[in-house]
Image (cartoon, rainbow, N blue to C red):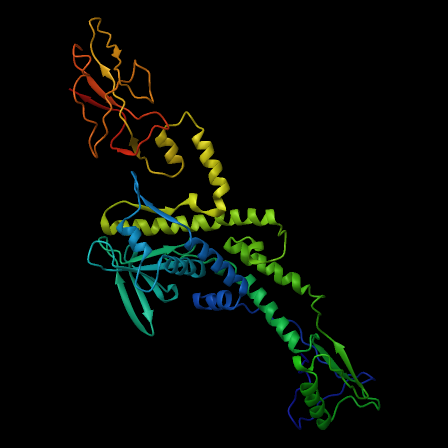
Amino acid sequence: MVLDFLRRGAGSPVVEKKASAVGRVVAWGSSGRVAWSPRDAVSLMKSGFLGNPIGFRAVKLISEAAAALPLVLQDQGRRYDLHPVSELIRQPNAHQGRAELLEALYGHLLLTGNAYVEAVPGTGALPGELHVLRSDRMNVVPGADGWPAAYDYVVNGRTHRFAVSAEYQPICHIKSFHPQDDHYGLSPMQAAAVSVDVHSSAATWSKALLDNAARPSGAMVFKGTDGAGTLTNEQYERLVGEIEAHHQGARNAGRPMLLEGGLDWKPMGFSPSDMEFHETKLSAAREICIAFGVPPMLIGIPGDATYANYQEANRAFFRLTVLPLATRVTAALSSWLSGFTGEAVELKPDLDQVPALAVERDQVWARVAGADFLTADEKRALLGLPCVHRLGHQRCQWLHDGQDGRGRGLGCPGRCAADPDPGRACGALFPARHGQAPEHRGRPADRPDLPGACRLLIDVCPPGFDTGFRRVGRAPINLTE
């Protein structure tokens, strides 16, 4: 790019001459002030996502990974394979599936720090459809107490207001932490805006340098041989025209410059190597990745990209970025949807089905399974599973008051094979009914002479003895006849 320092109006008089004996004609431009891009949501989307490959890939990588996580729905007692809430998430509306809805939700949250989900009323208690609304079009309307009283959605100058009440919440607003705003979240893109500007400006400068035949800026210096310090208007216009036609642009790259007497080219800009141009772009790209929590090697930025490091980076990416984001968003969605039905359910990622965490989850399962001092419910709680009691056969224990009054336990001939101790278990093995305790059918036939009252104490069979019956209640259950 040749500096346009010679540009002047045709016919303008020469106002001064250089005092130098050689009559040099030069121009100099110093550095100006820094110009940053705007920080509003629309400008950040354009500059950081639509116009920057690092920001685009970081947002897509996080949103696609989080949207692809397998989800489970459960309450305090059980997990659900089929449930109205899970069916609504699986098919939220006629035009989107679960992955499309969640990807849009995560994308808006990463780009603007805010995500909005609209509930379309249905025939039942649950919403009929769910839609993600554009965060750059939504405005929070605070009430007298400072909490949101309504949400205004503005499209083409028209405003639709979603009223909010304690009984009905049509909008689920998910936002990231912002230390200086009560109603809107802070976007990672805003934190990375300076690095985005540096990276984009470096790309723009590189393109301009290529258009200028990869030559840095400079000055055409005229030194008159006869003492003249200026060019005539005709000489000036011809020189400018030749430079623009034959020496500027990518199509003129490598073309030699023919300089007449008294003309000399003086480079005045820095070359890419002098500016450490490549390292500047890589440094800005790494800072963008840091703001989003994405390991740089996953984006393709050169570094310690060995196979082992890539595996560790992928695991760290899921542990530190994807899972916290998905857990927070799904918890907000399940809490919001529970308000429609009144049923407290929890939607969360299923960690055991995440391939990147398979090795770690295997180690966790092995450690928990080997903890003999924990009960089955405690082990399930450590693994994130609900407390589900299962009974195959019931171990019943007959107690009676003997003549000595010590309450000694007596064995039965058909005791449970999983617990052969005749002093604790007898053979009255009855399957549990749903919602009821196992049926007690009287004393064993071979011991009709048992005196006193007997009680049936229900307990769980030892580990490994499970036939799939579901247990209701807490252990042990005491039934007295």
